[in-house]
Amino acid sequence: MFSLIVAHDEDFAIGNKGLIPWHFKEDFKQFRDKTIGKRILMGKITFDGLPKPLPERHTIVACFPGEEGEDSEDVTYITDLFGFLEENKDTDEEIMVCGGAGIYRTALPYCKKLYISLIEGKHEADAYFPYYDVSDYDILSITPYEGFKVIEYQRKDAE
Image 1 (tube, one colour):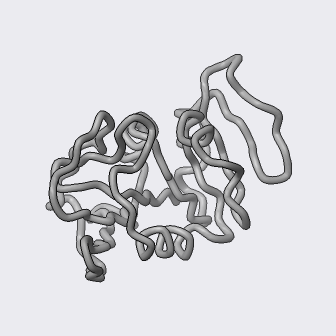
Image 2 (image 1 turned 135 degrees about the vertical axis):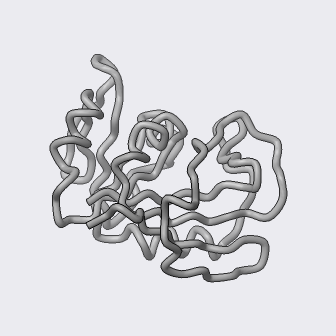
């Protein structure tokens, strides 16, 4: 199954000039805790923004043909995102969708769970998370932190 993890503000902003517009240590910690030991899916721009592959996770990097890098023990490149989503939509394994904006937009309909860090306020941004209707989801938990809260949603039509 696909789950999605993201931090967005009240305007759905997720990034500005390739950077996250806020810094909350607790948000990075909960991201790590929820993704450790799992396969994570992200776009090439998001992946290239990391100093190195995230440890203790296998990263699947979605990119256009000709942009792929060399596969390794920790990283696999794919050029058919829709094919990957369709092929893995019914797996029992939780695959975490980690961005960026285009990957979120494409994968959101496949995601049965959302882990949303809702950041207080509105920030300058040039990248946004796609709109989602919270009435399509059940809230499983809300965990408050200083400056944000983590809301775990499950899609109502999820089996």
